Image (cartoon, rainbow, N blue to C red):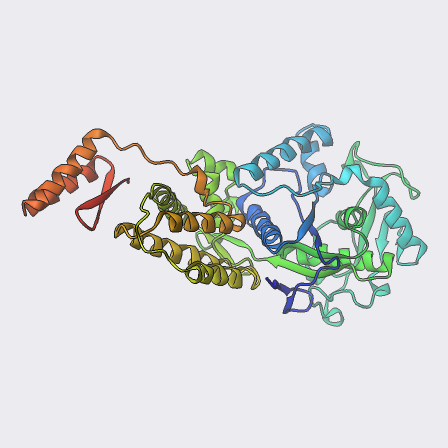
Length: 469
């Protein structure tokens, strides 16, 4: 399976070739642990999980590093506001983050480096940039990277530097494109930092956000690695600054493939607390939705397209997942050994179509279409009692294989709803009414079943299926 990705650096779809033929080294931007992650954050983490799973499906071993930003402007600001030690404050949100990953069935990265545990590596990297003449200490005692020393600055975000309004230097961690300027590598301590500081050759202070990721990526993945990901909002300044400081320090290419996912929208609007449409995963769980349903919705659109997250979409997710649960149960109950066997080509065609979609820049819509097509074919055969037991097993096996990517089909966890005896009795009475051609009575019984919270679906030869509404 030849995998292709849209590389943000080249703005082209490219065939993926790992530096090591069998092992992919990948850095994925993780959370800044100053609050609970919201579903917009998890859209990015879900995309990164999909990417990881597709690489593994393609027989690569993946070494994934996801950072935990536990020291920056926001973590210091909010820990002080809550009168807590930085470490105690961020621990709350680190633990919550890992709990949320489990609820969404997001696979664990190999390494989750915390910024505060890698200060030495950051100081060493800043010193290298100082020694090579790419960084300098300013009047405020902070260390800044000189973007004029790196002519390629702006190549990821495609910044036309000549037409930008350039400042002198930027000390904050996040800023807009029209403030292109020298950025802080090491921030000298000031009173707003409270007791958060480390000793360095330039006095006490703390790292800038951008240097954190470069130092940790280099430690665990090497000077050049395969893939770096994040949301489109990370492209500038964060990823742009990572490239500049890393390539200047190491005199080599930093990353071969850059992948960025688009924003999540909530009911067609940008998610924000002021609009009342801001939700954490915990908010949605409290409203009665499951991690499995939320995973389905977050994975429902191509990663480079904006995803519109709605409660209607969650309701549709519940319905779709119930559909696959019921199909899995039906397939596992097949005992017919006299039906005509399906050809190997029948199943191979689904597999080929699925792999063609998922290897084409993570075309999740195409991959989803395949499993619904499979479901339709399987249900037709089941309804006509024309599916051989061994073919039912092949359907199940293929769904399990595809769920290595999706992570929400859960074929072997599907459980049959216990239908009350009185509902079954009504269903049988309805069959008899139809045999007697008393269609008005049959319709009345259907409505009675519906009022009790169940639906009945007719199948050939007076068979039927009862489902909870």
